[in-house]
Image (cartoon, rainbow, N blue to C red; front, side):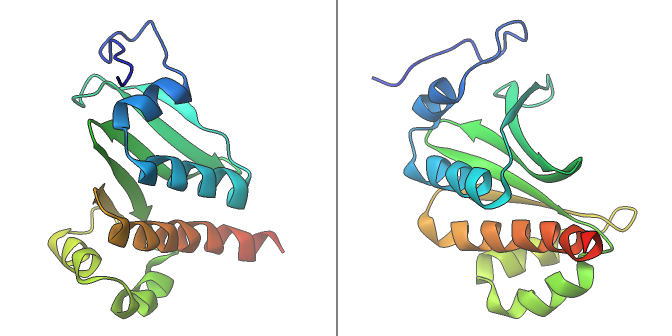
Length: 146
């Protein structure tokens, strides 16, 4: 039986195993493992009272957000912000992404040059797009570090 933790208790930070048990979806572990290995990023647990699950997991690299994951029962939401520096690369990649991601992007309006893509990761077809968006997000910084 999946572990139940008090998701709304800001004083009791979960550990990854508890969150993984709650999400109970292999795509969660696949994405977390990918980000941790590919970008050498560690999960940061943060509490936010404005989301139903209270806790989210952030991945950052060099002080820059790669993605934020919101655990849900049976699935998760992956937030990747496309900023003005990533827009050209993202627009070039967009025709190669799934119709789900294309529709998601078209439904979002830029706010101050930012596009907040919130992927509902319920099935494996969405995961490659999330990984591509994270790669684009990280790619801009990598080029400038050289």
